[in-house]
Length: 522
Image 1 (tube, rainbow, N blue to C red):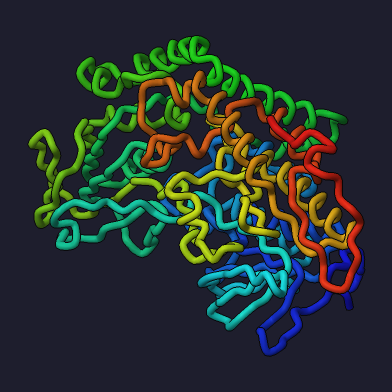
Image 2 (image 1 turned 90 degrees about the vertical axis):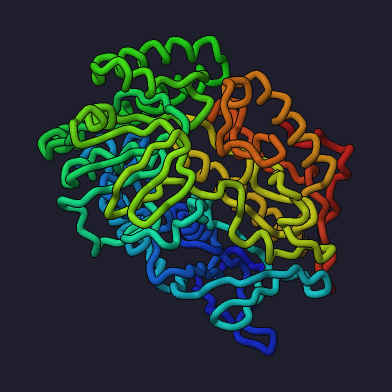
C-alpha cells in the first residue's frame, strides 16, 4: 500500500524491513501534543502512524509532575481538546490527577492503543536525502518515517540545582518534576528552592503537613489571586442542560486570558494589573518586612504570570520562613544562602523549573547537511511559525519556539498547529512531492518580524530575566501578538513558503515559485 496515501481507512502496521520498522508519520511523545497530533492525523485520514513514548505510560508533563498541589494555571474549560471537550471538571482549575485521567480517557476513546508504543526511547534521527525519510535509532531498534513530528514539549528537562555539597545532603533531594510519593513530609523540616509556578502551588500544600518550611527566593514574583473553586455536580448538570452555556463560559474565560495578553503587549496597561497584585499582597501579608521582600522590582508579565490565593497566606504562617536569597551551598542538612542564611532541613525540594528551549532530541536530530538541530540553532531556537525548520524536511515541532504567551492556553496554540500540520501533509499527498522544507529566507523574515514586535512587549521591556530568553539574550519563547492572530496564520498553509522535494518515479504537480505569491508572514 502506498505510504503517501493519506485517505486509506485501514490501519497500516509498521512494516519491518532491513532498515527497521517503516511508518509514514512518526510522532515522538505522548503528552497533550502527541495525543492531540495522533487524533487529528487519524481524523485527517492518516492511518500509517505511530506514537513513540519513552515512559511507561502517556501523559507528558501531567504524568511527570505529581508534586503536592500540582494543578493547571489556566481555567479547566480551556484545558481540553475542542474535539474531545471535558465538561464535568471538578474545579475551576483542574488538578494534576484529573488532567492525567482526562488524557488517558481521551486516548482510549479515540482508540490510540493501536498506534501508541510506550517504553520506546528515541535516541536519534537522521534525514536520509536518498530515501527521503527520517531514519531513527530507538531502544526498540531502527525505525524509518517519511514525516517526523516532535511532541516532546518544552517542560521536559528539569533544571537541577547545582551548588557545592548538594550531593552530600543528609536527606532526600526532590525536583518537583521528579517527585517521590513514598517520601512523607509530615512533621519534617522542608527546604524549597525557587518561587516559580510549581513552588507557588507546592508551598501551601507542604506547609499544611510539614513541621517547618524554608523557602529560598532569588527573585520575587508577581502573584494574582486565583479563583480556584470546586464546581459542584449540580452546577455541571445545569450547564449541560442550558444550551450555549458552556460555549459562553469558554468564550468568556478565553477573553479574560486574552485581556492579560493584551496588557503584556502594552506594558503601560500591565501597571493596572500590578495594582491588583499589590492589593492582593497587602491584604494577605500583614508583615511589612515580609511584604517588601515579596514585592518585585519589574513589570508584571515580564516573567510567567503566577496565580494563587493560598501562597501568601502560607508564607504568613509562623512555621514558614521566606529567605529572600539564592542558595550558594549545602552542608550536611544545612542550606546556605548568599546572605549568610542557614536553614536546617530534612528534605530538600528544588522547584527550579526546566531547561526551556532545550528540545530533548535537538542534539541527536540531523538535518540535510548532517548538522544537528542543536548546532543549527546555536543556542537560539527558531522556526517558521514555531513549527518547521529550514534544513529539516518533513519535520514538525509542536509548541516550538516563539509560539506561547504569558496567558495563552497551550491547547489553543497546539490545535492551531495541528490544523497546519494536517494541511501540509494533505498538500504533500495531493501534489505527489516527497518532502517539504521551509525556505531559509521565509524563516528568517518571520523570525525578524517576531523579534522586532517583541521589543515593545513586557516580555522584553519589563526589566527582568526569565526563561523566555536564550543565553544570548534572544526571546525564543514568546509570541508577540494575539492568540487569534496566531491561529489565523496557522489556519492558512502557504505552499510558496516551502521548497518541495520531488518523489522518485513520480511526476509531481508543479509548485508556484516563491515569487508567485506572498510568503506567509505575521
